[in-house]
View (spheres, rainbow, N blue to C red):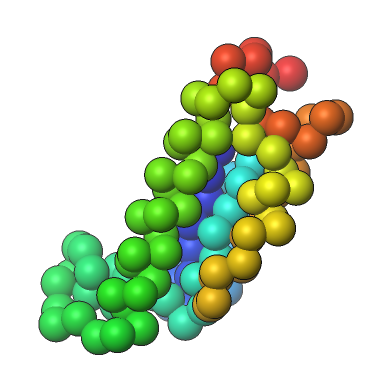
Length: 113
């Protein structure tokens, strides 16, 4: 499972703290997450509520897309995706979290416990 949220991803009266978006991540037996600094629910107008882009948003969308591709390729690759490798890769403005079963890998071919 890949969870993506931003530190400005709030919806007053519904989700008052962006960390609530990590509930599924926290509950999953194996999960990976990307947290984008300053990003809101609509990725500052990149989708849903379109608005003109800015450098911060465009860079964050590029990093998001690269991270999603990395996640998918890691899941289907031989041996699964390493939680250690996922969290070790640094991208400016994005925090990466992971927890996986013993062995530290997410293998989508393995049944959920």
